[in-house]
Image 1 (cartoon, rainbow, N blue to C red):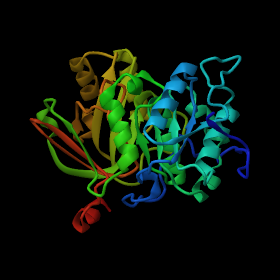
Image 2 (image 1 turned 90 degrees about the vertical axis):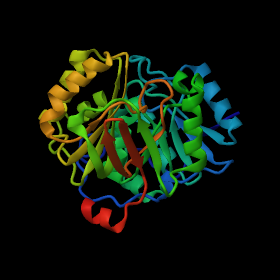
Image 3 (image 1 turned 45 degrees about the vertical axis):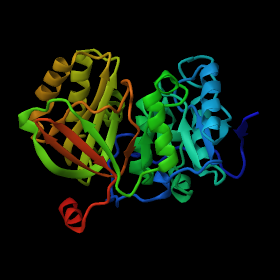
Length: 352
């Protein structure tokens, strides 16, 4: 039987300090990350599987556990991994229980990595229950998830200084039924972030207005809906260091995408964003419509925008590091995003 994370020395989550939500800006500069949060996971590593958002089907959890075991990992199920909220069945149990699973997994020295089983909805609801100080004091470890997990990625980096992997999740068809995405996730687990970084390439035609060479910054972002949700209502927005923003979306009509970009603009989220890399827009609108919406809303920022990367909800989704240094290059023939390669001394001066 799969182990279950149960109460030990880790205290129950307490409400986090005000101003540490999804949209809270970073107050310190982040060095190029070579920490344990981006390290490879040897065979036998203990992987905590948690449900911070919506409940995965039990059979999908079983398939994910089997897959991770076949890869050589020891799977530890969060105590509330299989819970379903009685009154709000789109949530995997109660907010404080989901938070407790995440907190324990991040703070337990016997856990080597934390993997979110699926997204859906609900990650932002658990943020007030997480203990940032305890997480900062715990050993860093790889954290995997995407979609709704954008809320946790942003919070963990801006509040606790922890980078993470924006990755398709194991209890979803995005991994279980997609060999390319599955291989990318496994490669990130087995190899971590190599010293030369990870390169993503888009062969889509790029607008001539957005040509760029060597735009550098910390890689942040994720799902557009979650970024807008985090930006709304926060007292401070944007970033204190140069940033490359990754943005993707799924199942949203064109006018919703327009509105979400407007929320980010009004909230000042793009402050210090030096370039934008766009991922997949599965079941949103056709490519031309998305380009028109993006250009209409973001052209005034005067920064390079690259199209056609494969992170997000689309088929063959890449596993991409967040919270690490990156570089974006764009020309007529496509765009290249380098994630995690340490900059040269000259590049460091340019960034700083």
